[in-house]
Length: 171
Length: 289
Image (tube, each protein chain N blue to C red):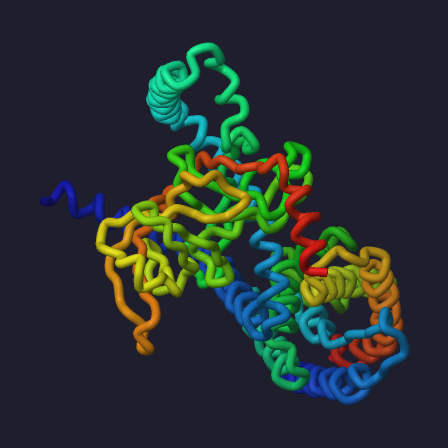
């Protein structure tokens, strides 16, 4: 219960940072960090997919309402809910097994957790910017936006993951 | 009954198991579909972008489907063409005879120098077309590479007016048909030679309107109106008069014209090239200057 409450606070903090800080930043056209997918990415792997799917829909809807995304945020975050177990296995070769006593995410090293998070952020950013532009008219600009935004998002995500592993997962 | 009961239970059980197995995927597809649909229709920009993408894909699919359909309808088309060739042969023979009677020593010469010899015809096929908008267009499968140019007239093999070419790429041309509110052409009553202006008012896909027809023309139901344009031969039919009305100032007639061409069922068309087109354009431009 305590863990879930901590997780809820972390999610709210991420949303606030995303909406009021990161979305207001205008460093460059091709640099648009997005950390709100962490809410879905860092959800307990043991949770049933249906709950993760519904939570990701709620997060997407909240972002759409807050930033006027008209479905764009929802459309790009919901696939993460379906992909996260596969991506975790692909990046770390770890999966949920019968009889596990502790959370799967808590058993990952920082490097593994970062690898998994960065991959998921890359998938999200690719979907997001592709759908947003709906065109391959400027492929270099598109690729630059995806790559640099993912790198910056991953860099911002790093301290959040540290807090997540130290304060939330170990509880 | 006792035999069927366990069987239906088993099927129901399997169905429930199946739904249990895929309900998450179904929910995902539903949420994702709804989000994408809302995003696609939220703003005119998104809508136009998606429309452009889907039109490109749809065009390719429709082109393939049309190719298959055309291939499947080859026997029917062949039969139509054969009938047409037979008719033309007969017509040619009749003309030869008539000309031979007029000029016994020089049978072939008048045909080459006849009024319509300045026109040549490019057969084309319809790739895609619309008929349900105010501004309809037809895409055909020949372009500049085949000698198609803008402003060329487009007719059916039966010499019924379809429209004119408005844009060309290397392999395709876009035709503005009569069923486009921007299309206007001159018309001439075959019976007495009076001219009018013909356009589409977007009220019916089967009729157009002729206006500014002189009171002396005395138009009647059933009279044929031909196209009057330097881009077309003189015997291209627009349609027949359905009804007539005199305008409020009692100075001219307006007529409803039933289209000769079935604009909803076009497949093989002819693009008419006037060999003197560039000369005519130069002449007209010099007058406008």
